[in-house]
Amino acid sequence: MIVSASYRTDIPAFYGRWFMNRLSAGSCRVVNPYGGPVSEVDLRPGAVDGFVFWTRNAGPFMAALDEIELRGFPFLVQYTVTGYPRALDASTIAAEAAIAQMTTLAGRFGPRAVVWRYDPIMVSSATPPDWHIENFAGLARALQGATDEVVMSFAQIYRKTRRNLDAAASRHGFTWLDPHEGEKRTLLAQLAAIAADHGMTATLCTQPYLLGSGLTPARCVDAARISDVAGHAIAAPEKGNRPGCLCSQSRDIGAYDTCPHGCAYCYAVRSPALARRKFKRHDEYAIILGGQELNT
Image (cartoon, rainbow, N blue to C red; front, top):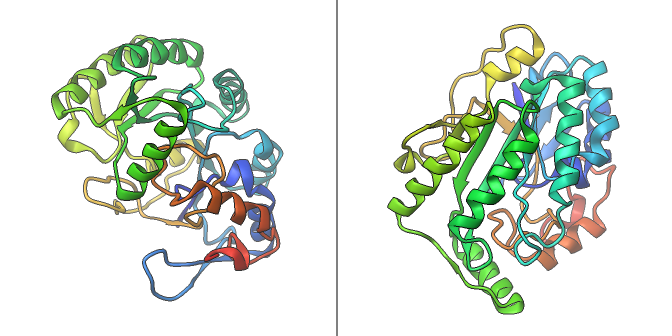
């Protein structure tokens, strides 16, 4: 079994102690975000084939990654670096610091263990297409050699996403838009070409209708990549979590509405204030991430 930790929240940045406590205990429990019973996830070495960590700040988790490797668990890190202005990314670390962390991770664990995510692509008056081209080129140049893949996607505008974006736009005085598919394909092709110039494969996450020049479908939970890191084959069937997803089968152990980064376009948080409150109250010894504060 591959364990995802977590596309619902940033465990490395905020919940590393909770994760290591649960790893030592050998299990955790997960609330079904769509209703249904709480489930238990076995985290013992014989049950876990590898981990996928999702983060915007691996700094607080560096020592934990060393320990995880010592315990014999292979892993890969899906690391988001966008360099967006504070109006969109309220409290993520600076791009320069994130790049330094990715370079360190690649040095310690190899470039196959690190994947750059430039997603979601958010087009706004502060981040128009030309801005993305220049910004992406600078990031790709700095990350050359630290990773061999960049995952991209455009923001999915859910109801909660629209509400949070509108609130941020009103506070900070910008406008945002969801471009037409043709405009998206054009920008993606330009970014993919830049990625190729810097030794990276450009992949597209769960938006097959936007596939075009230089792009292949992403497998963010990738049994083949984890196999490369582990040095032996890891078998996991393809089982995505939404239409168009080609990820290998996994169990996610995170919880929605618990990430306090405050990104204006986040699909995993209904309210930044709610997420901050849950983070402040969380119990690092709880068996469920977020403890008793999951629903308040």
